[in-house]
Image (cartoon, rainbow, N blue to C red; front, side, top):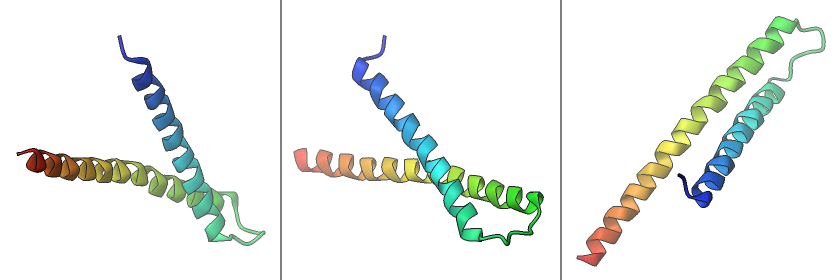
Length: 81
């Protein structure tokens, strides 16, 4: 059985990931600034590209956090010795 703190941390992390994806998609779609007469397909393409960029942001941030955690763990281990 998981510890309650781990379960709440997992829920918080999941909500943050969903929020980042939604925000990234909206930012890229808003930055495109399509003219009023553009087709629905053009709008879908821009939103789809925004979703791809936002989805790639999440694994990148996770790898960055793991790298920082590893660096600090190595420094802490070296300091203890």
